[in-house]
Amino acid sequence: MSLVLLYLLLLKATLTSFSGLSSLPVVRNDLVVHYRVLTDRQLSTAVAAARLGPGPLGLYVVSAGYFVAGVPGAVAGWAAMVTPAFLVLVLLRFLGRRTEHPRLKSVIRCVLLASAGLLLASSVPLASDGITGPLTLAVATASFALTAFTRVDTLWVILGSALTTLLAVQF
Image (spheres, rainbow, N blue to C red):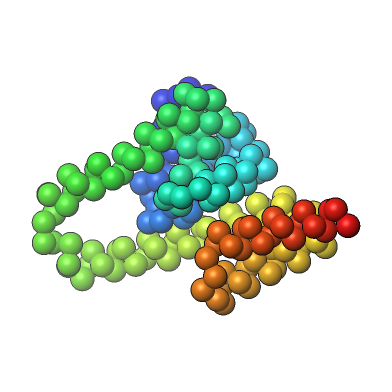
């Protein structure tokens, strides 16, 4: 896959999302399903690697780019991640106060709901690849419950999941 195509695919994903992980369905569809240059496991690893450190949720596109094309792919992913921020500056200058228009707000809400649905649709294949037995199912269920129903930071959920899995494997 060429670096330009990789950049454009990752840029499409980042431009069509409102938060970092809502671009995941687009990335999965393009790189895993359509072009087959990435596996579900590599995409899951990219998301996990991005969540381990501080930074934006969409940082996983850098790791995904790395899995596809090495360091040049990571640079393409980084460029795709930061391009929308530069485009927003130009867009805000052009739109000015028109961003408070009710129709524009309705469009933004619709796109946000659509991206939430796409995120849910892409989570199922990734979860089925990651859940391999009763232990991983229990860890996934507990992690979901903690993040959905409490205010526990995701860092602690990730660390607790890792520790639980390590202890279960040891004993």
